[in-house]
Length: 75
Image (tube, rainbow, N blue to C red):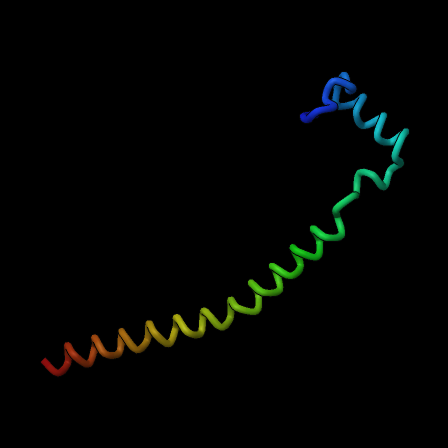
């Protein structure tokens, strides 16, 4: 209950009742669509890239370990 109109509510319960009475139950879900879209896109990108990043890191790790072992064997 912050902002310019914070004085018009006496408590959180009063705020909930007023919003429900004046704007209806869907007022509590304003902004859910854009937020859900953003989260879904973020998760899709993360899941898509995770496998590829793991593959690249595994290749780099094996190459470095392989070179290190070969260097030790040669010397």
